[in-house]
Length: 564
Image 1 (cartoon, rainbow, N blue to C red):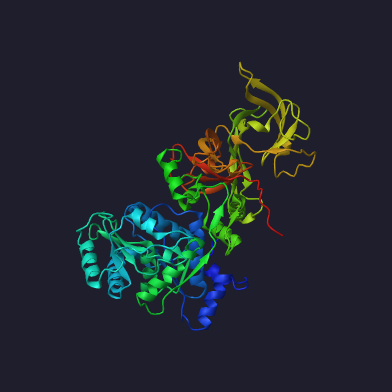
Image 2 (cartoon, rainbow, N blue to C red):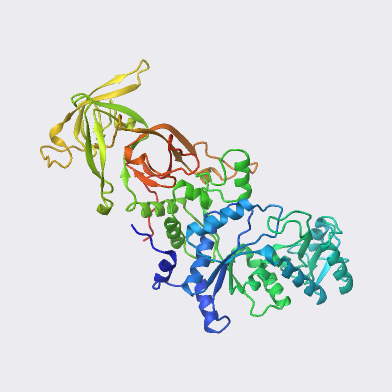
């Protein structure tokens, strides 16, 4: 099935009602505040992106597409203590995978360090910034709180000349980390604590992934971010609600730095997903403790992890559309994300036979040494996917749960004396079992009726149960991995000591599963429906041609219900 181009997909959505951000943008365009729309996604390269970032990426890119504007990918790389080239590369890959096209519009905040420095000098010359010798602890103490106004720094009234000299010396490396900072001079009595003479530059003798050792002073995020937006001619700075209290500072910076037609900040609600871990601090701890095998472990909801597990860009976009854009924070059930991947894959992927907990089924009256090819449809709901030939023989593997010696009522699979259909093959009747010394079943015996072959038109009788199988002589052994949520919020996401309440069953490894030959050539990221077991994807990290590894993307059953 041909996948739609994301840009065309967005432009097609004309009939959908506008969200509050679109209403504000159209108002700005109508009133001539801006004559175009330009948005950006500005990640800090200090970790991998997660599902919440996907919402921001697709929102910003979608707005640029809808209003025929431009979209930038820009790294807010102003803090070299936490940033790595690895994170830069992973973010670029994630944004591209989601379909957000930034073409040649890739930028780095660090490319603007000289312009940011000039802006700081301008503020000093205007009497709007000063060099402060207070320590970080003293600055915090002087700041006050929500009930107590702040106290002015004793260095606040230094002359312009002295501030220029000290700031130049800061750049030249004459001071140690934390010895001096540059602060904006705004209002220590402001009810908004962010406006109480915030620090806008600090000394940090560290190498930067992009600028090396050129700089030993770095701008603070709240100072750098609005300048970056203004330099790139961003019109609407779309960010999450935690930046709402920072908006007055954002506006102050672009106004006092005298940017023409400055950008406008608009906030929207973050995406919170139940039973997942998105905090970088927690994920880093999980990685460092070896609980997960990296930032792309399929139990996480980083975009790289979702991709590795088998989620598709289309399913993420469907999810983000369903969540919508709101002004108030709320949580979304993880089941909604699972619903979206099921909806995306159910008509696109072939339904293959794989046995995850195998037990041998021997058809005693089937000719020994004989193999035949059976034609089986790839997807009963989508005939356009065609069919494939599957080998069938005397010995098969079936799921252990598809047989019971003493079944309850309404159990329609195999039990002694019962007849079932082998999917796409024949009716078989159970005649007995083999057991080992401990009483565990090692093989199930049955007979088959050659008149009942699928597609033969047989109508003599009906059976209530159908089970899938894999021919033992033609099967390939693979590893399958089953996932559950890594934390369980019903028991509390955090323990009393602040650590994560981890689910001990978040990963189940099944090392001896059997699949049909059509799956032998599957490549990393290829996905399929395994009959009755769920949707699976070839792992991109651990799978090899000799020992394929399949990750379960999602089970077939859903607890999510669409709202009426």
